[in-house]
Length: 237
Ligand code: ADP
Ligand code: MG
Image (cartoon, rainbow, N blue to C red; front, top):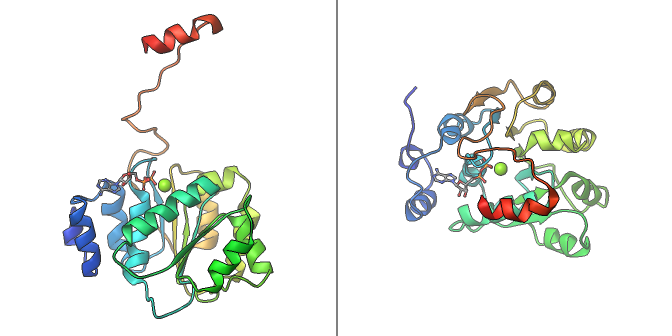
């Protein structure tokens, strides 16, 4: 296969190319290079790459590239473990899709449900959600997931750490069988492989760095210090 290194080498709609050139995202990160040719070819993926490696772009491009705004149904569902992460992904979806006229909704608990219900009633194409509130809205018949074409599990390792496995299975049970699944994680574990095997259709597994290593840009060190001297040490660092 041809190695794809730049956004300009991808077969995408014009709006995208314009956007990415506009912001000088000329080169793809390693995980984008490995995942995009496959995800744009409708393959299911388990993708592992450390934090900060550009995984959000890696799943936003296939979603936005395929979006059919005349559909008037939720086509893509992105699950994230926390409300902060869901909000962050939602922000990225809006930014990357700036030149496309789709609608997205971000859904999480801890805030009023009614504004989310009225937003959904207006019709959205992409939903970014935490599992609990999503299932709440489904049980209240406020969310139609029967036309989902893309299912993304972001931060899969944290999802499992936070005990969302049963919620994920409940969500999967209501999604149409015919769909594309992308699972993204900063780390790989046997539990993630097990989850992936049960929810993806013969997934391709890709890694963009040595398994479970921390980012090389982050130097980690431990300094033991008495409480009284903490400020002094921090100033020194
Ligand atoms: P991850 O989800 O892997 O932790 P993010 O998707 O949050 O990483 O991306 C981290 C940062 O990298 C973001 O600020 C994003 O804008 C930037 N980024 C993504 N793709 C590229 C690229 N191809 N070139 C330069 N920067 C990029
Ligand atoms: Mg991420």
